[in-house]
Amino acid sequence: MIRVVLVDDHPVVRAGMRAVLEKAEDMLVVAEGGDGEAALRLAGEYRPEVLVLDINMPDMTGLEVTRKLRERGLAMGILILTLHSDAKTIFETLEAGANGYVLKDEALESLSIAVRAVAAGDSWLSPSVAGKVVRRAVDGKVEDIAEPELPLDLTPREVDVLKLLAQGMDNEAISETLVLTKRTVQNHVSNIYSKLGTSSRTGATLFAIQHDLVKVPKSGNDHANR
Image 1 (tube, rainbow, N blue to C red):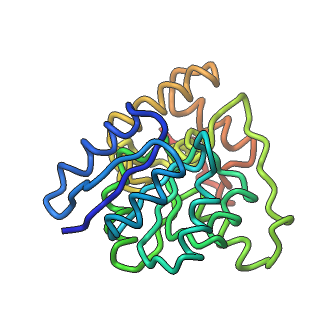
Image 2 (cartoon, rainbow, N blue to C red; image 1 turned 180 degrees about the vertical axis):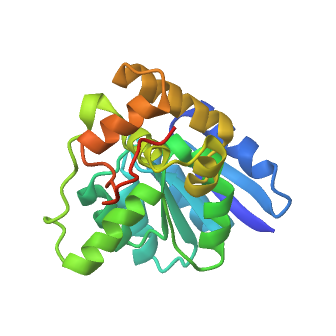
């Protein structure tokens, strides 16, 4: 069994994560906490395979907790759960010793997969986070990775969905690519249509092309995806 400790200052979020993990036959949530001090205490007491840790807590950040645990030589996997996808937070957290970074808007769909990966000694990054890490590996500079300006207040996840939608993927293919449920993809697509003021994939695709979110192949047969 993969023993997991959950630490988040929102009980509802913890309950949601526990419900997801308890569906997995190979996982057991052994303890929960709501702040940084609890994270340090529970990690030392239970020595779980994976600590799922919120980055924003009342007394200390997940980043500070991660540093303290690594200073103490605790070898458990640390999976950061957060709303933040900015480059500075991502790299500070990974450099502090975190093994994984999961965005909260996809956590319920990918949490079990992420926990298994971290427990096995691998890393897990949300897709949009992974892109930043790859670019840093190529460029070698954090400052070169700027947060893109998102059109019409689209969230980073909605942009991910829009890009795939504009490439002709249906909802099922998008859910498999981004490790999201079909219902979550449907909700994102609905929000995208609402924000773009369109009711069709063609309209969304044209918007994506106009804003350079996708590249159109140079071919005489080019046409908008239906």
